Image (cartoon, rainbow, N blue to C red; front, side, top):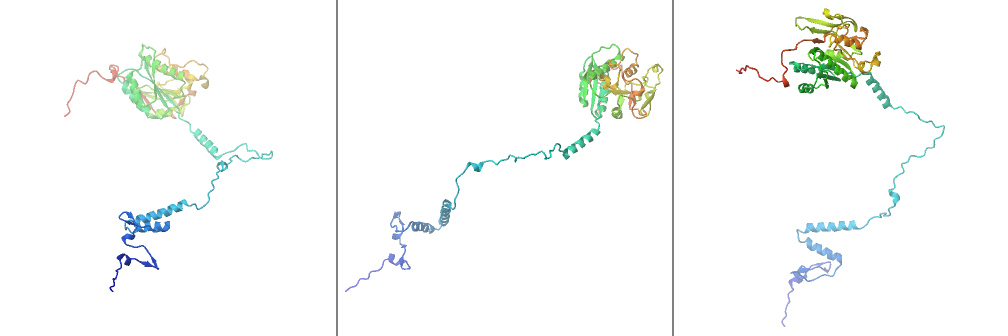
Length: 393
């Protein structure tokens, strides 16, 4: 009797046993997916199914990293959703109420002391600073009056005087007086000097040359009286020469001050000294060399004195018995304008102050350098150039 042996199929030998339980077969017939069709779904719990899917993806090699990220993401999501504590959601309006900032009620009784004055160290310090600042007196203002007119050296004279005044410490105001009208050339010079100035015009028509300066100074005096300018007035002609020491000394004047002036005669062959003789700051006499001027009460040059401007518009302060305006006179002889003007300001030498003790310093010079025969250039320009032109070699 013939016997037939039946060989086992390869699928049967490929089965694996673990603890007597059969696992999943590795044959293609037992895979979850085969040629895109579902062949077999083992009956298991949802966790087993998730593990199976993860195991299949894990075996793909390059998908292991993605599988791990997905796994930890699911675990983190699970922990984020599950509540671990209790939160009180009952919000009351009292929780957001502002605290009471009102001061506590104070029961003030009659026996309690009442503070009426509090002294702070800051106030004491400020008072000390005010006292220290009050001990330093501010500089007096200087009012420099300069009459000018159109002539050949006018530009040179004004520029020279302007540069000197520019070096003087402020406050200083320069009153420049012209006759009839304001010239553009003079206004341009005044602007370029950098000195605070006032450009005034004398409307008085003067037929005599010697009276020209008198009316111009009176126009400046009227301007100071109208505007009540406070300072030390000094008549500084533009053709004189001045030192900075003179302007600094003017600020020491209280009422009226005077000093000697060196004068060059018109013949230019000698110089004379005109002004006070002093014992310290007291005037005890006068220098004079001209016999025709010995009849003058005060022998002083127009640029050899200065006075307080309040005498013009506040006569009660200085005890003046009359209140007539103080002006220079054009009706007196030439050379007597100074003495007749000073007689209206002071009574005698006891009311004068000698500038610089002893009056031994010459601080300004009166020079006669006018060129009367030269024509005044219009706009500071000559119509013709020099006739001779030399080439440069």
